[in-house]
Length: 342
Ligand code: EPU
Image (cartoon, rainbow, N blue to C red; front, side, top):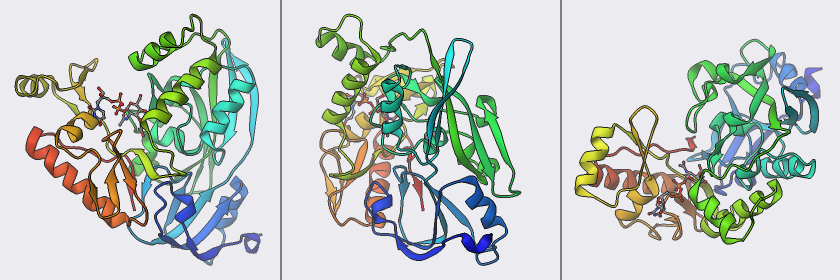
């Protein structure tokens, strides 16, 4: 069976990463099902070559060509698969486009994912990053996922605790999850839906539109409008969404910073720590709209780094380092990138 796999070589990844960086994959396999991964395990041609899993490419910074075998996840399929405790269970293959999937659930009359409308990337990547926006994270509507373990070829189901979801984080970003390839994800969407308008900007926008009791579709449309105002469309300007995580600092450090910078944007966390707005910190350092070569800081949102055309991953990395250094010197705060550097 193993010779059925079509492994390609020296493949351009430019169309497969949202920064539009011109890196190449030494070896490349389009994965359309678990059977491809199983066949790979018995294929002698690339035994011992490291594997690199690529989803929608919206969370990677390709600083050079990839020497590994790139496993490009293209597993499709979406379906309602059951009901459980007042929730409808909906499953999608890892390779499905995230926003198209959100749109599909809305089309089925199901609310629950609308706050995560228009986030670039795939369904399979969503739990890895525990994507979040406008008061909702994947973990809030997650049921389970299935994975293929590259170490032993086993397929298994994982529930939320095993995924160890955190802010833009999960087990899949750590050493003990590094061999796990997400095959499909199942979400639990409530039959008795209520709008989630905890995020002030979203609540205000719904109010401003004069909508008293919004439908899931109306919340989705509002989120889409807000995102379009603030964030660049990767099809027009290469980017990976927020480039840095919002840093979480001890309450004491936040209070000391507030004494010096009363405008500091901060949000108290349940454990007493404070989440700072990285966009505000970067903006204060004067980076908004600035460029270094073809890499730049998006003029409408300082948290988003962009490829203004022909930028290299190394240029973006240099820009990111310069920003980190300025924020460190001015505020004593360490910014951690969201994308994975390759
Ligand atoms: N701000 C500035 N200048 C800027 C950007 C932001 O002063 O250039 C200030 C804003 O005025 C606001 C605060 O910083 O007071 C926070 O900004 P915003 O509400 O736009 O959200 P964010 O913290 O920049 C986060 C997520 C986004 C998510 C939005 C909405 C992270 C790293 N980013 O952005 O997620 O869409 O909230 O929920 O958590 C992503 O992860 O790729 C992403 C886009």
